[in-house]
Length: 496
Image (cartoon, rainbow, N blue to C red):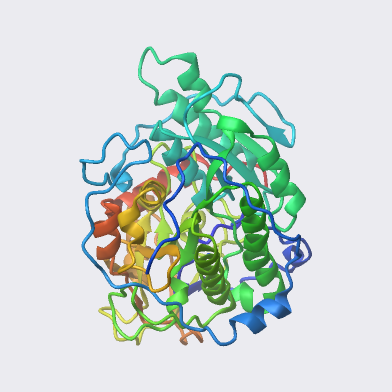
């Protein structure tokens, strides 16, 4: 799975980087006033029927031609939120971004190697969440944090284009190991991850997942982490990016709609902002994406908003990632891109263990209006980012989140930044990785790269105010956890 990690490309690239042309022919889906009536409870079975239609890129682009700006509501005060189980309405939102988990040192065992691996042997009252792209870098951490809340069961759909089955096995074991002493067999069963191999470009693959769960075990909600995400590559193979990121979303929404599944958390990106008029960047900033990847995320947000407008039962939250970094503290799961990393941090980590060193590091420009002249990005620890998804899932059940004065249209759609609100330069990140790894990272300064923006730093205040989200981990935490993962797993998951 190609998770949408690269919210904004760092101004750096290894010398002599080759184009991964071998991937082009096999790109897959990975990782968008008054109310008619109130949201149904999690056990209601609302179903809708529509005529079956296939996704047509041309008609989509035509429909979007005159709607370039996606309205985003300004901040407003929020009443106390309600959790999904509706048992803590009097409490403030919990920031799942602040979770920390001890290391995992246990052998992983999975029950099956079939395309679909289901583990549920007993009925459970916990809602089931589907995570397309859940075997990828971001998706695996989202799946783990979701399990660690002990409130949900998790199903993953992935085709491993840029992901590995071992990630699901490892995160499952971490979740089981974290259970308290004396945990019941049901508690252990609820930590099992059901895994389906499939592609979002195939509605049949998606339907098979939904068909596997019925009654009280039906899929309750979706966290969509699947997407192609390389900004540079997206301009070289735009059809693939629209097919996967936009077409895959449309297929998913169609199957969700047919099955009465009306809750979605969508992995969007800070690239929807393009070059912002001011920094830090609030959600009210005009959307003006400058890359194909950014436009796929912008279009997807519009599509989701339109679905929310059309169907009062549908609720969705888009999370605009800035720059995820680091790895789970255990060192058992982390980022393992297939081929040469396209993002700064995994590239530095792999250079430190001896890969991709030829030619050194190329830093694109040192004459930007930033403290050291190199581009600045808002890096957020992957565990903090993953925790933000759980905050968003719980916020889906809160009517105040979708109050009429907070949404520009009548549908229940909101978008929030997921960032730390602290900018770090390219050279800051190189220095942080040098300290933890001991490798000096020889580098050269070259001309600016077209399209690079000097500073992309989030204003995270709206997510903190309304979702209870706050990224707490530091740059040192990101570097140390990334290095723990890479040094303990120099070949990643060992399946390349």
